[in-house]
Every structure is written in C-alpha cells, then in structure tokens.
Image 1 (tube, rainbow, N blue to C red):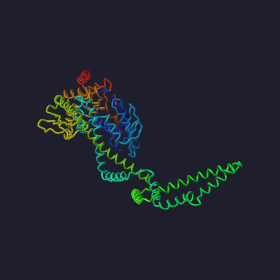
Image 2: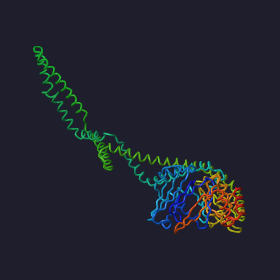
Image 3: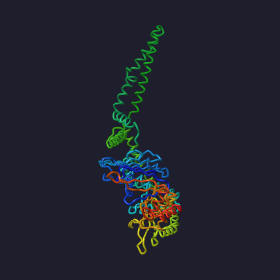
Image 4: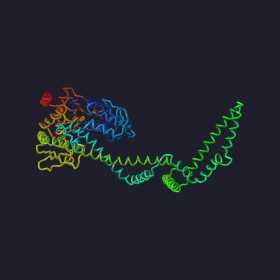
Length: 552
C-alpha cells in the first residue's frame, strides 16, 4: 500500500506531502484547487510521460516520491527479474529536470519507464472516470470469477501442469523440426557408417597388410636367398658349420692342456649354437615362403579399400577412419534417440492433456456455479447506486484449445440502460456507470483478490443523497480489505473516511499554490457541512454533517 506521497515543484504545487491511512482516505477540496494535479503527479510515479510545462519553477527540477509497503504483494520475483534490491518499504521516485530529461528510480536504482509501469500496476489501481479500467480486461474478468469460485489452489495446480505441458509441446515442435531438417543428412551419415561397418576396420591392420604384401610379392627372392644361406651354413661341400665342427674338435684337444684355450672353446661353442639356430630359422622361413597369387589379390583389394576410404574421408590411417566411425555412430544414435524422445514426449503430452482437460472441466463447473449469484449481487448493488436498469451478464464460452486458465473464454456483457444492447465491457464507453460497475464488482471480490491500493477519482459524479450514501458504504466495506483513496464531491462518501484530506489554494506573492492538510474531527464536520450547504455552512448542515460522521 502507499504510505506517503511527496510532491515538489509540480504544476501549482510548490511542495506537498500526504500520508495515507490503511483504510479509506478521502480527498476533498475547492474546485480547481489541484485534485486532478495530485493524480497527475501520482501518474508520473506510475510511469506516465513527463512534460516540462508542468514544472512549478522552470529553473528547478520536479521531484515526486512515493513510499510503499509492498509486503502483501509477493513481488520478490519481480525484483529478482530486474536485478533490483528488494525491500518491503519501497521508494519510487520520479525526477523531471528543467531540460526536459526525466529519470525514474526504484529504491534509488535508475530504471526505465517500462519497469516502473510494470511495478506500479501491482501497487496502484487508479480509477478515473474516463480512463481504461481493469474491468475492461477479459483476463481480469476471469480472475474475478475465479476468486469468487475459490479456484486459487485448483488453478495454481492446473497452471503448474500447463506450464510443463506448454514447454513439452514447444520441445516437441523443436525436435520434430530438427529431425525433419536433419533427415537427409542422417540418411547420408547412415550410408557412410554402414560403409565403414562393412569394411570391418581393425586398428593397426594396414601396417600388417603392407608387410604381408611385400613379403608375398618377394617370395621367390626370399626363398632363394634364405635357402642359399642355409646351404652355405649346413649342406654345401665346404659348409661353414662343418668347418667349424673341425675347429671345435681341435680346440677341445687343446683345452685339455691349456685352460686358456678352454675358455675360447666355450665361446666358439656358443657361436656355433647361434649359427645352427640361424640356419634352422632360414630353412624354416624358406620352406614356408610360397608365392600365393590369390592372397596377393586379396591383399591388393583390402589395401585398395582402405586407401579409397581414407581418400574419401580425407585421412591417412585406419585409426582416423575408426575415429570418424565413432563420430558417425554418435550422430546416428542421437538421431535415433530423437525419434524415441519424440515418441516419449508425445505420450507425455497426451497424458498431460488428458489431466489438464479433467482439471479444466472442474474449473469450468466451479466458475459456472458462482455466475448466477454474482450477476444477481451486481444487479442488486447497481440498483442501489441508481442504476436499476443496468444489467451485467457473465458469458463463458469454450475456448478453441487449452490455455493457461483452462478451456473457458470468460467475458462480461454490460448494458447501462433499459433497451440498450448488451456489449462487452471493453466496447462500452467509459463513464460514471462503468465506474460504478467497477466499484461494485471489485467490492464483491475484494476479500479474495490481493488488489493493490485502489484510487477512485470522482466516481460519485451524477449521484447524491441516499445513492451516494450507499456508494460510501461500499467504499467503506472495500477499505476493510484494501487501502482505498477516493477523491469525491459527495459529503455522504466523505463522511466514511478514516482520514480526510482537504486540498485548497493559497496565494503566495504573485502566485497561487496548492496546499493540503489533514482535517481533524471538527474540521471534517465543517468541510462536510460546507459540501452539504454553503460556505460558511448553516447550523443545520453542521448537525447533519456531525450525524453523517457519527453514523459512519
């Protein structure tokens, strides 16, 4: 709620401060004293455009500051969203420099007008007779109906599920589009992957294949050369191992007489053993080496396949091909998984939609159940406010599809006079009748909706006497749940005040300025008496005013 409003250097206001009570604050005053100026200043801290023409002193800046207690409004998320410091005691300030530059502040942090407008809409509900009111908005009409139906918890559960449902539908659409766009690419990736799988690649095989191919291509030379080595070592007429055998025999004889020769004989024996192993290995390889034309052809084909794959993928090794194969597998699997995810999402969305429809149906029944009594109470209260022929009808049509509030389209139809065509409120010209309708409907849902500070500007236009008294009673009841500020010309409404401010003009040197003061009990009686009669008021008017206040 608004706790105070400070205005400096605005229009004909040099400096002014108003402290607002929790309940009903009434503002009255002389004609032209500045009540509308007060609302203009309030509009500036609500984000209205500034104009240097409104400066009281054109050489000084204009400052308008509002102090609010925002604890009841659950605005923490708003402040987090805009990275603002949250304090339950909020200060909103607007400054207009003589140059025309305007600045806005929330808790001393500079903000743009859009942020200020978003915040102020949660703090102040300003009802001026010819302004657009919340009741024009279809969304607010539905909100009122839900409040009357006690749908708060059910609607919150519905909306929590609806947000998940909406996100899933968005995710599904994105997946379907991504899958569709990737379809051709995935077909090609699958082709490449199949090609690599068919190749049955083995790490390190290319080197082994190259070596085997070289060995088979030179089989005759290998067989002949190694066979020749074996021949020279073992089987020729002057075989090396045969000659070494004779030498070893001689060394054995000498070793018996000379121990030094014995050591040489041992080394010689080891040398012969090594040559024998070498000869056997050469014989073995020579015997096992055969030219195999079919195997060479197979090797050529395999190596050619590997070479073609490497050129295709612009790499130089089988290991790199295996890496590409792994990447392709990951892409293809991801694509396959997207199909599975699409199917899973479709099933989840279907289940969520079924649950949402059941919950929406309960909301519909609950809303429909309160419409008759709501319409009846509105008609009764409008009749009390001198609008006996006024009619309001709550229409609830099925929506084309599920939305964030169910599948109902709710809107109010209104006709102020007998014989007038019922129209949606947004299409009805604003006026005193519409202001009274707003007062009536909001008073009926006041205890169920956390409405911000309600400011009514001369909604009593065109009424008086008993009707004005009834309007005052409605405002009084409304103020039991909300902070209400009413600018009025009606003594019956003024008598209902918890605090009563009087705006008046005062001459200062060569200028007229607006001032405001909080009236005490005697001043209230005199002000209301003046509204009832004349200035100065008659004794009977004073008694009448005293009676109005006493019966409050």
